[in-house]
Image 1 (cartoon, one colour):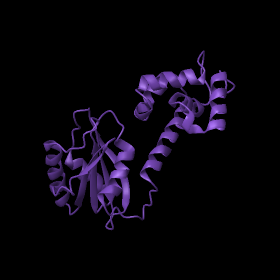
Image 2: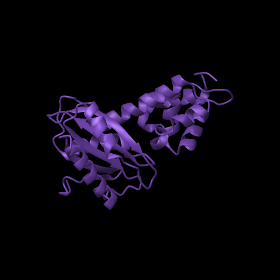
Image 3: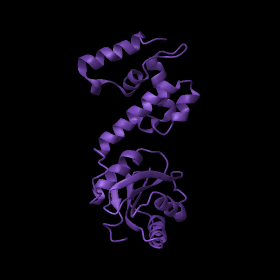
Image 4: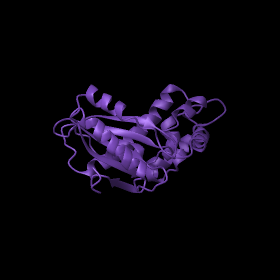
Length: 221
């Protein structure tokens, strides 16, 4: 199929006439994909991809599913770039000269990347002496029940990028942001490990699609 597919053309016409907000998830994805493959028009392909990945919010975590179903690298790249653009819009402008001065700043960063994932990911913001971002790293991936976290790996990464401070963040796929006892325990272990090399742990954010909780604001750091 080509970009002259009737369903895709119809989606583009609706976008032009009414705006992108009036398109279905499948139509938006079809416009991004740009064309179909053998025996499938772009809209049919988009619908199948959404169904197999569990919906638009989960699509970013299922790029391998897209590849298995025969979508080429160029189409995958377009979709992943669009999803990343959306994340950056949610997060707001990332000025690497701007310091993370409060939990809400870090929470926006973590929520943009983690809030809609179906499994737990434990990530770190590595900061310089003025608490400006050096890099963001997704460190550990787990299931809906948790992720195995190794403090020594966080220390190793912090030393490797010459960080002076670290903010931890992970998601609760259940939507409940309340920190667990395990969350509090790993926070203590990471803080102690970082302190041995004179690196400060500033906060640990638990995020979900419903909001966030700062362990520093709770007085647990």
